[in-house]
Length: 148
Image (cartoon, rainbow, N blue to C red; front, side, top):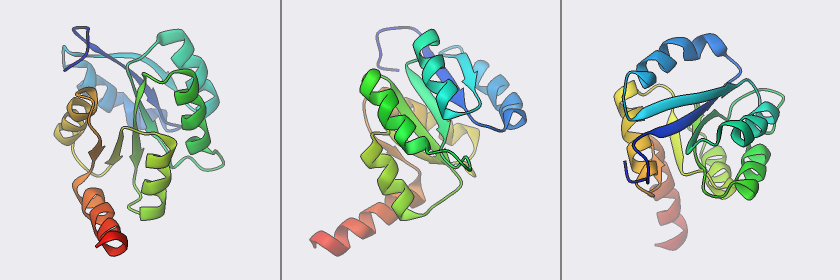
């Protein structure tokens, strides 16, 4: 990882805590990754960022009844060095574009395996933008429609 520390501190944000149990154990098994907090909603996520000072936030952006994208904007306004990977089950191009406009460093489709998530984390921590492969294709096709 290309940051100034030996480990990447990660905050998990998802309203389905059970989903994270196994996921958290697998992430924690990597010595270069440290889970420093969890939040169930976007309001508590901002508080957790203030408390735990993560390098990276993995945030499910499909929570019903919440405006997670606005939350991302507020988080990045207050903590511009924090990287955020949006986790989603949606391939809807409009949501991807909104997430990118909100300032996320990555968009990860939840159906992909853990190895792909590790790859996403590596890419983002190397100061690059990560898009799940099918999302990258959709964004590229949309770009080509407008600019080619």
